[in-house]
Image (cartoon, rainbow, N blue to C red):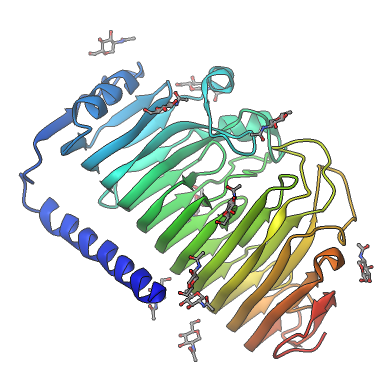
Length: 416
Ligand SMILES: *[C@@H]1O[C@H](CO)[C@@H](O)[C@H](O)[C@H]1NC(C)=O
Ligand SMILES: *[C@@H]1O[C@H](CO)[C@@H](O)[C@H](O)[C@H]1NC(C)=O
Ligand SMILES: *[C@@H]1O[C@H](CO)[C@@H](O)[C@H](O)[C@H]1NC(C)=O
Ligand SMILES: *[C@@H]1O[C@H](CO)[C@@H](O)[C@H](O)[C@H]1NC(C)=O
Ligand SMILES: *[C@@H]1O[C@H](CO)[C@@H](O)[C@H](O)[C@H]1NC(C)=O
Ligand SMILES: *[C@@H]1O[C@H](CO)[C@@H](O)[C@H](O)[C@H]1NC(C)=O
Ligand SMILES: *[C@@H]1O[C@H](CO)[C@@H](O)[C@H](O)[C@H]1NC(C)=O
Ligand SMILES: *[C@@H]1O[C@H](CO)[C@@H](O)[C@H](O)[C@H]1NC(C)=O
Ligand SMILES: *[C@@H]1O[C@H](CO)[C@@H](O)[C@H](O)[C@H]1NC(C)=O
Ligand SMILES: *[C@@H]1O[C@H](CO)[C@@H](O)[C@H](O)[C@H]1NC(C)=O
Ligand SMILES: *[C@@H]1O[C@H](CO)[C@@H](O)[C@H](O)[C@H]1NC(C)=O
């Protein structure tokens, strides 16, 4: 019944996206209001015009960014839209005034992180036609944080906040400030044909430029993404349920992530019902990895935390092609703690289980297919399964068939 409902809602996402694509070819679209956003074109802030358009066209609206460059020099908070199409033909460039943004980005209410744009609403359809681009001017951020993972008040780019029955299609995101986008408090959202590239042009790494993070969200489909970045390609965090990630290519960064999770002492969080399939990972650290905080809280978010409760369960990661993965194919660790803190991998009460890794081919630099450090306090990991794994070691072309385990209960299809 629930499965049927989930499939039915996925089908409805697919249905209304094809409707959007069909109708964009034939203007006008029959929306009550159309707002075409003017661009100053000289570097002065276009955000006031963007805010005005979103305010005027927030119900039954059609908002159009033309094929122009828009300078975004102040924060945008455009939530509670209803039945709105947004066409992004142009290029949005965020200013590189890091001291301004450190003071003026907006808290997201989690992990002490903040953002430059909250966008959300019901029946919201954003289309970039493969051209529309978000440019966070990230190099300015990579240069000031110099590899520090979580720099207080460094903002993420787009925060999709409270999007319901919505879609984001054909968009490019380059040089994001921090996490490229975060999907929060959202339900039934399709994100398709998305290109993300955050690459440092000097020795300061593009760290913490995750392609996307999900939290407190349900029923999210991410399809045909190409992510080249300096951190997690896609990371599912607190209360991410019924998520599909498929037909995508992840390059350079850390690979696909479940977590980190369990950062808030005593808080219960889950990741449940996840399917990841047909992914090519090129030069990523792992193909996929799981990370939870330890059981002992040390300091506060964004850089500290721990002591969280909950579980990860019912995850299937299948049909992966690994090309030059830099470490092991799969890593599970429950040791995340305040920067610099090490060990304490057996204290987490957060349970990791019921994860299937099947049909992996390709080459890796590491000597294990899976390296798993599960927390004894949580009873270890259970229901971990590997099947149809055909991996060779990059340097020697020899078969990799070992697993390193600590507290893995009842391994399925492999021996520790
Ligand atoms: C996970 O999927 C099962 C089977 O469809 C369903 O019963 C359950 O409610 C789902 N869990 C969540 C958190 O949606
Ligand atoms: C930029 O262009 C806008 C619109 O034409 C104008 O109002 C504004 O004064 C210009 N600003 C600068 C700094 O030239
Ligand atoms: C910020 O951008 C301006 C152009 O808008 C450029 O002149 C300046 O060098 C840049 N500053 C940094 C720190 O990147
Ligand atoms: C953003 O707008 C929403 C609703 O319009 C409001 O509740 C929220 O406080 C605003 N957030 C910020 C940081 O201004
Ligand atoms: C933010 O950090 C402060 C202390 O640095 C902490 O008290 C607070 O709980 C944190 N808030 C969130 C939302 O993580
Ligand atoms: C990402 O950008 C870098 C630098 O511009 C470029 O070398 C690389 O090919 C791009 N990656 C993809 C997947 O397009
Ligand atoms: C797998 O994903 C690639 C994109 O990386 C796509 O071209 C291909 O059609 C997908 N294969 C299937 C069977 O869907
Ligand atoms: C996450 O979801 C669970 C199950 O629905 C709920 O009990 C919990 O309160 C949620 N966690 C947070 C931090 O909201
Ligand atoms: C696991 O999740 C999948 C969707 O990802 C769902 O089809 C299946 O029913 C779930 N299984 C259980 C036991 O909840
Ligand atoms: C294994 O994954 C590859 C993609 O990497 C796919 O083409 C192939 O059909 C899958 N094999 C099975 C048995 O599903
Ligand atoms: C965790 O406990 C296991 C035994 O349950 C032990 O082998 C391992 O060394 C411990 N790990 C750490 C980091 O303390």
